[in-house]
Amino acid sequence: MKLQRKNRVRALAVGALAVSGALALSACGSDDTTGGPGASSAKTSNIKCDGKGKLLASGSSAQKNAMDVWVQNYSGACKDTEINYQPTGSGAGITTFLQGQTAFAGSDSALKPEEVAKSKKICKGGEAINLPMLGGPIAVGYNVPGVDDLVLDAETLGKIFDSKITNWNDPAIKKLNPGAKLPDLKIQAFHRSDDSGTTDNFTKYLKGAAPKAWPHEPAKTWEGKGGQAASGSSGVSSQVKQTSGAISYFELSYATAGKIDTAKLNTGAQKPVDATVENASKAISEAKQVGKGEDLALDLNYKTKAEGAYPITLVTYEIACDKGNKAETLPATKSFLTYLASEDGQATLKEQGYAPLPTEIADKVRKAVSSLS
Image (tube, rainbow, N blue to C red; front, side):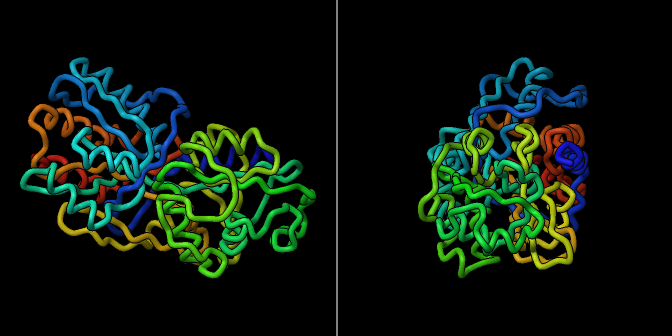
């Protein structure tokens, strides 16, 4: 049963993201330093190389596994350009970008107004914009001996991560899983130690869907009580894999690569919802565009009760200046981001467990990238 479930998750992760509606740019990063799936077999002959030298970027670790493949493919085609992307986390990536140290930043939540204002100092004559590049679910991974089919809901998750539910045989968990043999085992809840867009999106879900169980305001910095911390998506997923009784949140690609069990969500729909790319796309399709002009920021619906819609989702964005980019890095920046948003670049995401952009959004991103100056 466990193997069949894993295979189903892998198969669904290959599904394309059928998102109706526009994506909005957001900036928050997830971080991690261990790779997932290896190099892609995607075409690289269509990559148009431009610029020379080293292109520095940092931020979201949520996109780290995808970025590894993108960088490898691009570097293989464009020998004169070296791409150096550091998965330091959304918060750190945005900070570094706003200090003018990188050409672009990766983030899993939209830039705040004050961050856009700060960006005008480095984007001479312009400001930072959000360019969506991939989407997908934030999985709730767990390690509970004897349990490979677990159902949780927003209220229970809120209490678990705020240290109000501390044992796996708690009545609230039993009620959601009447047929499961839940052990008398302490819950080891892991959260991100770094400023993270994944944390921001996860806590937005908890606050939006269960405000009484999660009284804290959503943020990139962890605000919950208790628990244990680890750095990056790779850090928390590794802790879940090796710690009996552990639970945490991270991108589906890490669960897939690490063969970690993921919880289904009771959203109020008729059936609990799996963390899959297909189910995340149904939730993302309900998002509203809040960005203006070339800014494509999304307001995600964390309260959806639609059948088959998995509400703990994120969209990862590349943050760049619309105007005022450094002359020495602009050509390579445009060339690399153009590849990421291209059909070939997006095609690599499926095998990594990410959701590619829908065509209408990818077209908007390509247009925005081409206008960078």
